[in-house]
Picture (cartoon, rainbow, N blue to C red):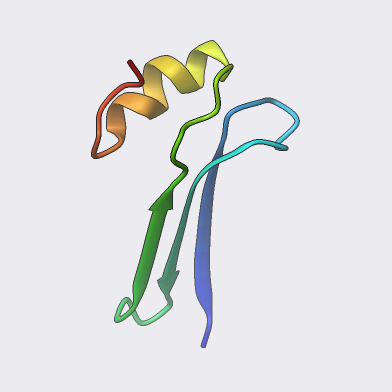
Length: 60
């Protein structure tokens, strides 16, 4: 089974994973997970653009 992979990272070095999504090529299977708790020091872009898109909203 082939998969599409998408990840969001908290830092520019891609060493602090924030979220991960996998979707099968036939779109019949999907997996999505967000890290909990979120990293404490994400880049400004991650904090202002990515975090508000999460189901739980922006980091308090």
